Image (cartoon, rainbow, N blue to C red; front, side, top):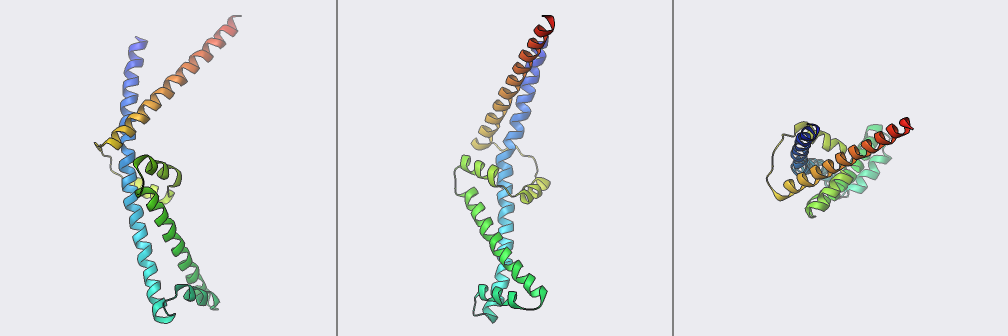
Length: 173
């Protein structure tokens, strides 16, 4: 009876793990779309500052930033800091976007796991709708993670059984 129950639980565990893991490629795709939106918005904002630089600073955004920082008005100084932060943000988004879109699936998966932007992950998760993508990346991700979790579960149970047996034998001696 225990073997039958364990077998059913294994199948349920595998199926749930498989379906959840299949979501990862779709989640990454939606994350990339959201990242792209953030990148485009940041570029748009920087373009507005660039227009001001073209009108008043011979097109030099760096000259505009220096002049803003030299200004005695604190709000102008803060604007210079904001422009610099925006430029850095665009550069970081562009690098991250290239890492996610210019690689094969395994490298994209690695780049996502190691370099994700927590805010974008959170906002993607808030809007994420479950899907069952039927493509090789989703199916292989689901299978590998489900099998891996099943192996970890089995090894954990085996370790627990051995530990329990050793304690039982230790108590009997």
